Length: 262
Image (cartoon, rainbow, N blue to C red; front, side, top):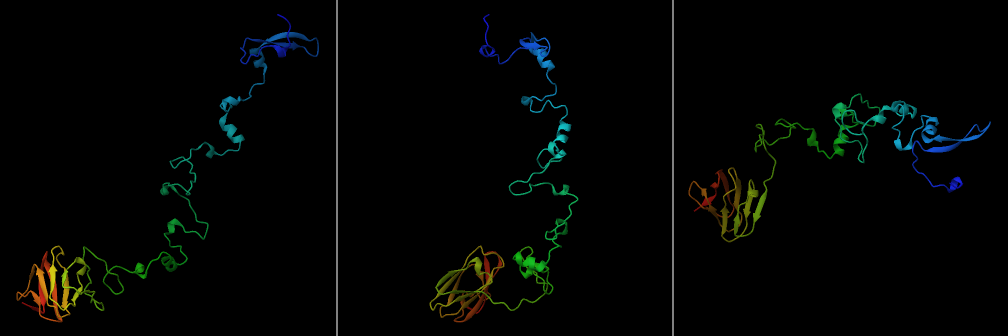
């Protein structure tokens, strides 16, 4: 083979272990060119170097390496909310965790409220209620004694024998000659002011207990139409300023009382 410069030789990207390389032996004494295999050369290379492609899998002790890097035991934990996980804040703050597992929490900031105190550590409870938009009913007790607030129970209100006073009746004023009662008329005064004859229809579906007061305030006499009963079999009001009452004692039937006429 003709002599060539080393730089003119073909490149060998992946030499085999048995491939040979030229090497100068006894450089400082009597230099002689000899050969050496790739395997023998690698065997003489310093041992313990880490290979980049191994991504640190070739360290002798991963634990010792972490210690030398100054890492704590959190370095080997998984982020999450299960037992043994470390919790990481998200975009809204602390993620949902089991609060029963939080122990040893001590409030050291007097400007913060402690969960265990149940708001007993508020600076001013009254001001806090105001800031929450609560009215004075918020501090009242449900019952029928003085200063109590009354609660509806099973659709009824028990006043506990107390008087109900100083209230105004709601008036539904009608100016036409026909009208049909609606559920919203329950407990109201229906005032008719027309001077001509008026027909008041008592529909079904208003429910047992419906009641209202009917006044013929104008000259127009009111005729009641529907299912109702009257002690004198009357079906009309007696005249101007007549006051009558309608009470539904059974579903879809009324009792008519007061200033009535045939």
